[in-house]
Image (cartoon, rainbow, N blue to C red; front, side, top):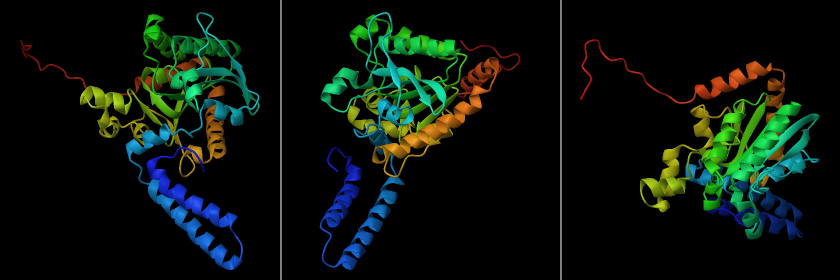
Length: 329
């Protein structure tokens, strides 16, 4: 139970600690101990359901960023134990903020790609907090082109606050790298399935997320900007991030309703970090179901469906000028 927990998790954690202590001190009247354990466990179950059934958008943002939440490599250890990572963009460097390589999903060869954050300060600096430089996105594109050449489907995991906005990244063409990925993913003639596993931030997320099927874990988020960034722009006050999160409608439930994503994958009660193995099992089951449905499609039909999917997003209105009306001005 040691480690970092969110404020709204702490009542549950304290109760779970009492249960563990009672189990470790079990002795004396076993019947009385069993009755007390049963009472506390039922209370903990009620508390979990009560807290996690009415999370605010800002609380889901915190869960999406939870320091214990599984990252791409955590999922790959379970989904594809023999995953072989491939490195480098063949132009500048290897970017540890994006990992990619080949693995078997059951009997299906797959190219896996995903953002990767760190667990501690040293690893976060190495992974740049999951914020990729242009070479990361160019590495991803190189691997996606390779997958297309061999006819391998692609599975991507999105978990980034956004692409890195540093001077060096801009000098090396960050915006071009993002745009190039988005353009080429739209035309890759192999199935692409995307899962937002944590944060889906801006173009840095979208550059790995132009999929035939885009899904989100229940407590992940997906938005054009972080709540803090939005608050800083709109109100000149990053402390209003909670208000911004409500306005952005960035939760999985919001985006399913808006038809930006295709499916929400339920997490174990309390979040993915409470049971990573079960979360990975659910991700695997859902990804396989969609891949099997996509693999049999003719290439042109696959591309046509992908194009239609993104053309249908958004709402716009057209007005026709009334006959005889004089243009204003």
